[in-house]
Image (cartoon, rainbow, N blue to C red):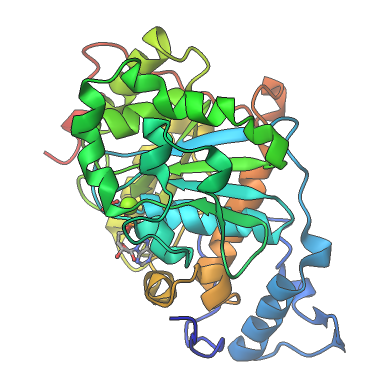
Length: 351
Ligand SMILES: Nc1ncnc2c1ncn2[C@@H]1O[C@H](COP(=O)(O)OP(=O)(O)OP(=O)(O)O)[C@@H](O)[C@H]1O
Ligand SMILES: [Mg+2]
């Protein structure tokens, strides 16, 4: 699975709205490579130079968070880009010097596939972790493409966990206590990203109890916000009963297609509702992003110069600039008010 294709992409190098000013890939930087200056007159040359910068990231390091950030990536709507965002954001942070652990909490095991780690039945996984049968350190695997990118895989065994958990003591807090017992901080991990299944069942609740932050990916399509009200209410319930620190720190717009008006309308509506919590970096719809998992790779490894890779790098930089508890005047605090009981605002969209 590892003999990926050439790194030369046929995608255009045009930027998508929201690509950050001050990104390490600003136009004037394209001519600088570890081998000196090369003209980047053509799209392919520009892309090759961007790829070179990703592969030689010395100048790209971002600040480490003051404390380990545990981020749950949730949206009960299926196919909105949860897994794609979890693995590519993790890779983008790892490329920029962070140590990142992805916990795959979806029985589909898509994050494990994309990170190129083993996840056949019998491999120590998030299932054993939830059941408390095995220490965290025995479940962690290193992604073959980046030593700073770690993964606790999901195997098919996790499919039964929703049911098995029902009868267990402290069933909502099992992931949290497994992570705490192992003192993940001892691994020197900067970010933990938990990829959730498309449901609001016990697996997602475990992820919400274990994290401080929630990242919600929203696809730039019709019905994008449908169900988000219910997600926010569930987050509110977990916050008030199980995890007072929990808050929505980040919303990311995925699969943006600049050729459609709809994408802009959705982006505008999401920004109108969530405000600064929405990352400026928008993830474009990109063939490279969708092809990468087929090679057991993130788009950062599969095609480092592509627009998809650039947008996740920008998103990673923006995330890193947002520190939980930062002063509001910095504009970096991203705690969204959690919807209260009966708030139907988001449910109405698209009808
Ligand atoms: N930016 C993108 N451009 C093109 N395709 C994308 C992009 N992001 C995600 N996809 C594709 O969309 C599909 C759904 O993405 P993904 O698996 O990340 O969603 P998900 O929310 O994790 O789904 P599920 O709810 O099933 O877990 C996948 O085939 C993925 O390759
Ligand atoms: Mg998924």
